[in-house]
Amino acid sequence: MLSERFISLAAVLDAVRDGEGITQATLVERTGLGRSIVAQRVAELEAAGLVASDGLGPSTGGRAPRRLRLRAEAGFVLGIDIASNELTAGIADLAGTLHGTSHEHIDLDSGPEAVLATAERMSNVLMEQAGARARIRSVALGLPEPVAFTSGSPVALPTMPDWDRYPVRERLASLSSAPVWMDDRVNLLALGERRVNPEAGRSEHMLYMGGGASLGAAVVMDGRLYRGARGLAGAIGHMTAPQANEVICRCGKVGCLDTVAGGAALARDGRLFADTGQSPALAAVLADTGAVRPIDITRAADNGDPAARALLNRAATTIGGGLAALVNAYNPDLVIIGGGIARAREHVLGPIRQSIRQHALPAATQGLRIELSAVDEEIAGVIGAVQFALDQLFSPAHLATILSAAQAQST
Ligand SMILES: [Zn+2]
Image (cartoon, rainbow, N blue to C red; front, side, top):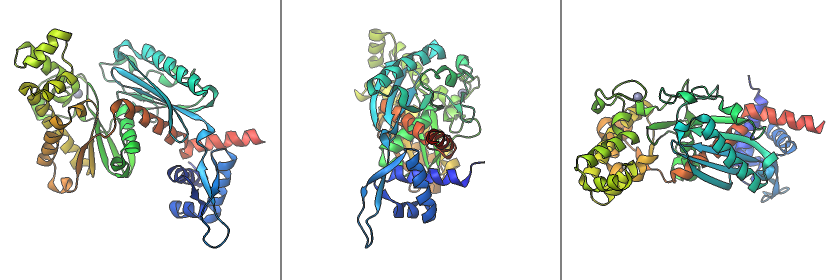
């Protein structure tokens, strides 16, 4: 059981992180804790090197109050975002300001050993460049699949057996002695969106739909990510879609939304339209590159290709049906469409909005905003990973570790 001490420490630190230059009087207001408790916790955080004075605030009659700030310079965190064919790594200070990022194409099918070796190599370069080698305090990693949050191991689908319960944390232990945290990357995309997009940051009840080859959603309840018992909350790609009938999904079941509206399904149907000549634009792409990717369908739609537009419209309408079920279940005030499908912008936003409003309870869609992501996916994942690394580092459970280490050093 966590003691009140660490819960109140985390509350004070959270308030300092949120409000640069905050005074102790404002901390008392924000946290609801007593003045003497706040003073004690601030002293403990200062002794641990996490909080420092930041000049004086305006006086309200007596002595001018001390302003406080997070010591952003007291260390670094690494964020690693692994998508199905891309890997982005970033290094940030304790305020979450990025000091460097790097990006490479990967093949997830090459297995965890090869992919994690790439992550390790890229992270080593970033640490060297930032002069942060011995100063990493937390590492966070996003995977394009559910992660059992408490055990920190991937919950792989049958098509990715290599990743199932792979000891990712142990594999990355050579990077630094800092703890390694993992989550489904769609959760990290949602955290990144909340950090960068003020509308998402303000929402306490949000759904974020993302995903590349397959679809996934993050659920934010009462301002926090809701992961479920095994990290599978929001697995929208495997909801039953009436249009999917008997199509076999990569999860081994039939009738999943992914099989008709996921990125892989779009590529498959685009290829069919190219092969049959129904879409001259996609036929030209296929002749040129030997493949049809979802982004090619978006480009063809942008150029007015009716078959490509119909494909995106159908996928978006089907996705909207799945989102409507989640809207009924979770009653959000904001739905953000991110991931690969968001690149098709106006081709998908209208049909998704229409489909959600058609299928969800009218009372659940009253005042509901449905918007495209405001953040570039390539960077949203790494911003979210950094945010996740910091949130875990400054959680009550981990603060206990930090403070006992600081105490041991000072005695
Ligand atoms: Zn499935």
